[in-house]
Image 1 (cartoon, rainbow, N blue to C red):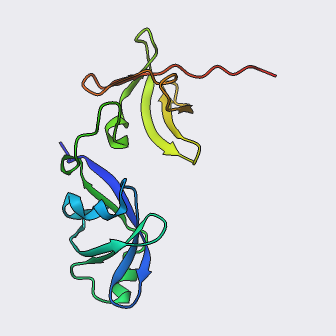
Image 2 (image 1 turned 120 degrees about the horizontal axis):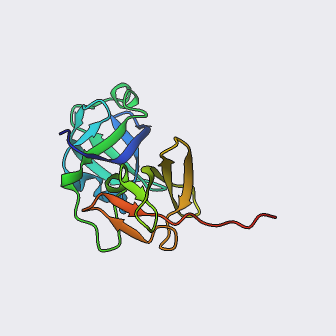
Length: 168
């Protein structure tokens, strides 16, 4: 079985001339990026944080071991950064890591399989869950208690109640 990884940040670009990079973090606290151990890129390259300080707008300024000049920092631009799921703390009751939800079976209230969770997004107005239905079509559903009344990680399923819209 392959190790489950969680996307925690992306290198936005170089910062200065000494090898630092700006990292857009997807952690609750940008400063916690270094709390989970080494980071890995999508191709598996391991990056060890040598120094980290707060940046602007949810970014951290990071210096990685072995990245010592602007050219090396620029080469990391666009790299997506991951940590092992096992390195993260367990979420509080009623909270979930997106990575734990992706791939879960989506069922209706009666237990009929509707499809699978393909992704979760937040476009600014709240979380939405993307369901790929058994027929292949996908739909975004607001990730609210009304539309997703049950998340059962142990059983590998969620229950969804798609919103009903009035036709005008």
